[in-house]
Length: 107
Image (cartoon, rainbow, N blue to C red; front, top):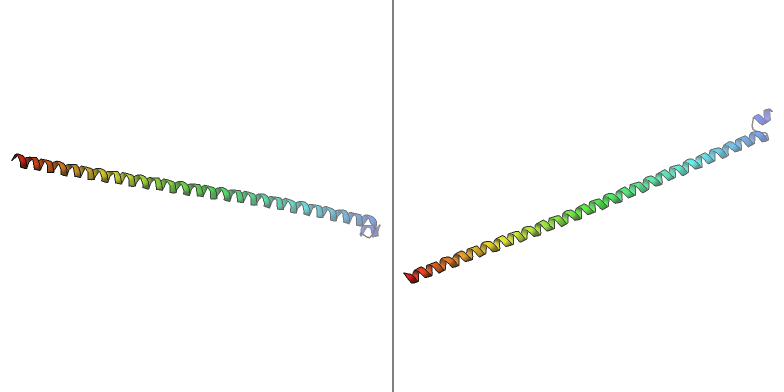
């Protein structure tokens, strides 16, 4: 009885072997779960980073397009205003010249 209790007998060795198998299985399960959790976390981080990068790129593109459109509209407005002002000045000069010539001829 004493020898079996101390692990020398067949029953004691079997209990130790069973305990070792249980410990190995538990360790393997824990390692697999930890690896799975780490893999899920890595995938989530990669997806979040990808979404953030896509959002930043879209925002930058939209801002650039809006700025270009605003600049083009402002340039067109300035050109139109300048052309209109030059046209008005030319018309005023021509009218004044015609009036001066008519007054000179009549007088």
